[in-house]
Image (cartoon, rainbow, N blue to C red):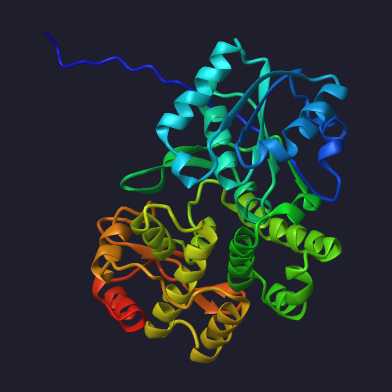
Amino acid sequence: MTDSVETVDVSLRKAVDDSYRITVGPALLERAAGLLQDRKLPKRVAIVSDTGVYPLYGQTLRRALEAGGYEVAAEAVFEAGEASKTRTTKAWIEDRLLDARLGRDAWIAALGGGVVGDMAGFVAATYLRGIPFVQFPTTLLAMVDSSVGGKTGLDTPHGKNLVGAFWQPRAVIADVGLLGSLPADQFLAGLAESVKHAVIADAELFAFMRVEWERILARDPGVLQVLVARNCAIKARVVEQDEREGDLRKILNYGHTLGHAVETAADYAELHGMCVALGMIYEGRLAERLGLWSSGERQEVEAFLRQAGYPAVDTLAADSEILIRLTQADKKAREGKVEYVLPQRLGAMHRGERGYGVRVDDAEVLAVLREIRGR
C-alpha cells in the first residue's frame, strides 16, 4: 500500500445564454404562438394550470398554440391555492407528463399565478433533468414579480420556497387584459410587490403609483401596462447582475423575511402579497430602529400602504416569538443569524460590509414586532 492518489479533473467551463424576452400588453394570449416563434421551442407542449385559471383561459391558450403548429400533448390542472404548492403536487404533475410520454422534445406552458409558475417551473427544471418552459402569468403578482427571474420552488411545513431550483423561462408573456377578472384582494396583493420594487429601487415608481392609484385600482389597461413593464424592468436589471442571489438579488426579498414568517404561521391561508405588505411595515420599522432609514420616509411609505388598503398589523393569535422562530428557517439565514434587507432611502437599500444582507439579533426584531403587534 502507498499513500499516492490519482486525480482526474473534469473541466466544464461553458458559456450559457439564458436571455429571454418579457412581452407586456393586452390580448397577448391569443397571439401566443406568434410571440414564441423565435424561442426555438419543441412542437410538443404540456399546459400546467390550476382550477381557478384553466376554466377561464385554458382553452384560449390551447387553441392559440395549436393554431401555431404546437401539439398540446398533456394538461395538468391542479387545485388552486397556496396549499397545492407541495411535493405531492409536483409529483402529480410529473406523472401527468410521464403518462403522456413527453420527452425532452417538449416544453411546459405555465398558465396561472405565482403558485402555477413556481410549480411548473420547478417541474421543468427537474423533469428529464430539464426541459424549457414559458410563463403565461395571469395575476398581477406573477406579472410584476414571480414570473421573472427564474426562481421556482415549493413550500414545506418548515417554511416557504425551501425546496426549488433556479430555472429561467424561455419567455414571459404578460397579458394585462387578463387582470380584469382577478379578484380585488388578489389584485391588491399583487400591488404590494410593486410597492416593494419602488421602495428598493425606484423612487419615481413610488411617486407614479401614488399619483395613478385610482386608475391602477380601476385597472386602466394603459396604466397597468406601464406598471407591469416598469416592475419587470426593475427585476430584470437585478437578475441580470445577480442571477443566483449572491448579493444584489437579496434586495428583492425586502418585506419577505417577516412576511414569509406571517404566511407560514397562518398555514398559508393569507395571500402572499398581503403578507409581504405586513413584512414591509415590520421591516421598515426595524430599519428605522437600527438607524438605517429616516423616520420621515418610513412613515411616508407606511402611510401609503395603509391608505392603499393593506393591514397595519397581522391578525394572528401567535406570539411574536413564534414569528422569530419561523424566520430562523429562512433561506437567507447565515451562521445561525437571520439576514434582513433594509432600506437606506426611498429607492435604495442599505449595503454594509457583508453586502445587502444585514444580520440582526432576534431581540431587536422581537422588540419591533411586540411594539407593533402588542403580543
